[in-house]
Image (tube, rainbow, N blue to C red):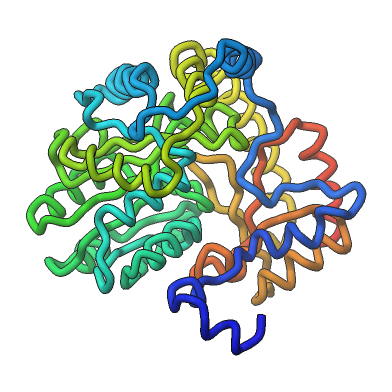
Length: 388
């Protein structure tokens, strides 16, 4: 893009950074025999009953516009699911259906952020969080997850110090992409008390909530917040229900935001497709057995990945409590983009560079272990030989 054309772009779009995960992936898409472990996506397809429900919905003529806030039947199913899993007390006025968690994040930023607002995020972290809020004009402040005793750790005193009365929002992702860090219910309670005191929004990316190593669901603000708290939960069908390509999710927010989010949806996408929403109904209503099977598969994948990484002498492995990633460092690696590119070119294994998740991720690589055992074994056989 030439400089003259740059002058015709908005300052916000011009300031955005290209996804470094995509940069690596673009190098490997056309290479034969590549093992793609770079994206946050499992290898298993959506459940058959989810697919058949969408097909049946299409065949029944579900081809038309939907309510901005989503089909009532799906919103009701989200209420039932949320109250059951998290012991929450929401109703349909708290639910907005979105075209993915990513689009939900954009709606939230548009709804609560004005140019110059101070927003605190964590690093290493999913880059879309900070970039989406920057598009809305936020001033991003980062707090860093640290490694202590082989686990990722958040210094709560530092986070609370960063959440000044001038702060508009804090955005959290737990279980965290890429580290697998999980915020405890005690930490959530402490943060909620602080944010209530100063009138700070808590925005929680709960997309990996059901992919938790120590139970059916990770600790959630939904269990301790009131419906009128300055709290928004962002969720998606992509990860736990193996529906990445469907682009369907939901928000849980104060009822006062319902009309605002509906209006923003109208001006963004109008509505998610009806037949896809019907698939979401079936996923929530009848998908628990399949979800538990996925949890078991991911548990096996993690055990294998952790064992193999621990056996690579130059790798520093850090325990994960959730999501489906290993985020590890390699001794002597100071440029994760170069390292990920070299690994791809020399071994055919696609990994995400740590720098994609912020400066705190430099020197690390992210590996998605949501793959069958034979695929992971082949990937680690290649990696061991190269890294050692």
